[in-house]
Length: 266
Ligand code: SF4
Image 1 (tube, rainbow, N blue to C red):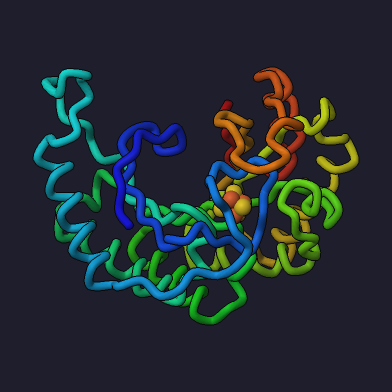
Image 2 (image 1 turned 180 degrees about the vertical axis):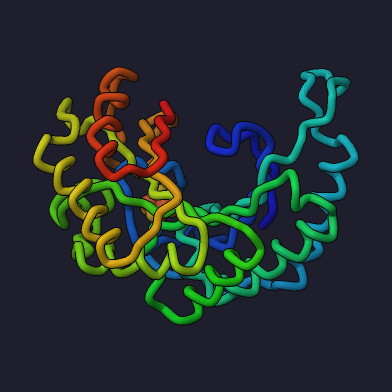
């Protein structure tokens, strides 16, 4: 349920919390790295066990258990974040808000508030569910942040990448809810499928969707354009290839009109 990992997103050691022990998700992204992904929702997790495991891993990590040297003798790796992510969509868990509360409390108890971020990686599809919104609000109160997926500018584009044709209006409304509750970064995957990168039309629609969300009151902390870095574990993996770094930067430039902080992660 709790695992240490060297993370590209975190820029170092991340302590992951996995609430999806059966690899359940309500999406099936073509680039998903989860082996054995299944469509569905996870059952309950034992919150007392989660608290015990996280406490033990934070204690070990703080004591230098995971050093940066290959021999184990290098300087101890600093914990960059505690992230609720794991093998599926975490907001599907019936204990999502309880898990956020445990992570926030233990980060404070271990004196990590100033050095380790608290992060939830979500597809953003369930912010309108009151229990999920409550968990995100708890995350915001603890100074944490949310990573919210936007992988296509139209329902058809999202169907192709995420295997869900979630309507624009739902994405916009959920982004408004997310940013009102918590610092929220919009995470935009861009990749090539069958040799074809995102079209000009799709990218325009993605920017326009974000503009409409901002007009409706959304206040994202920024937009992250990121490319395919690790192999997909899904049946369509052979259709995918990463875009060149120059192409990622050119795509990011299209989002400049939003006047939001922009990051590119190759
Ligand atoms: S939302 Fe996340 S866990 Fe779910 S299919 Fe997409 S990448 Fe995988």
